[in-house]
Image 1 (cartoon, helix red, strand yellow):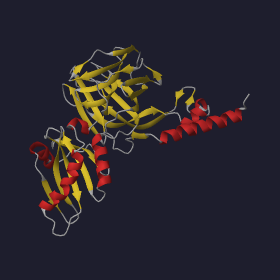
Image 2: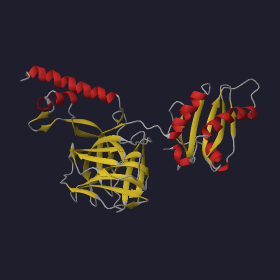
Image 3: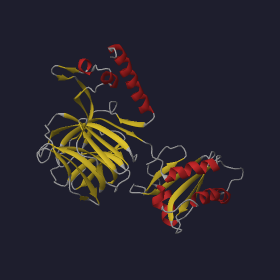
Image 4: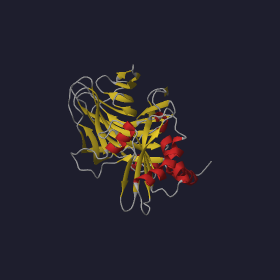
Length: 369
């Protein structure tokens, strides 16, 4: 029989191995501890599915159970270090709350956690349903395309249900799930895991329903979700994911290998932003998801070229056309200025780069896949 000391050493190594394995995966934590209280959470976007007014999302302070440490669990010290006879230790920390009390029945406030789209991922958050007269719900929307197309999983205190369903073109598919008793003002942990077409859902660390399979949405954004006049809190939101390189980014990366002297390269497609475009690929990976300008919108709409020059850089913005010859995207090509630089020779310099990219382009849809 192994000694306790040997077992402790083995469990410690196991915990360290688990932690080391996590370092190989990308992780993003949505931490609002430095955000001012009673203000909108930074880096997030409040939006609405259905009818009524957008939600009122704010950073608040609330008591939350301390999360167990991975080493505590692996070394069998959870009981002594985290839990006391009266229950888990609590700590005051920043949470995100949805405080609007719009009683519209078809009212679904959503808080988009950044602009990044996730394909295969594991998302975990803790939620607490605080109040509500018409409804008392909290959930997570994922693989969000827009306000009318996404998956959602949610807990309902009033009906005692934990359901998953798909929203497509604004229509809610029949729910899938179980009856689960929830109480207001209690924290629960919700985990969403997506791998290919498979969807796994956990509640408080346990499988909440059998593995689901749906091919409708392959990737998308993640959002916190509530319904009607539900007042709900969320905290400790994080996503572990495999960084997805879309075709547009691969196209940019490959083009830069062929033209290493380029100062920059960015790709924009039409989108529902104030300027009508958003960036989907860039040379340094920065700014992806940001809105473009009226220049890129005009390039896509009319297939025209734009030229801009300063002392450090020449920027030529040109259309990237699909196989039908229709402008599918706008490409910013950033060049080092030459002596006697003109708009015409800048366009001539940029044209081979655009042609190189265009040879691999099939359709606008392929850019984001």
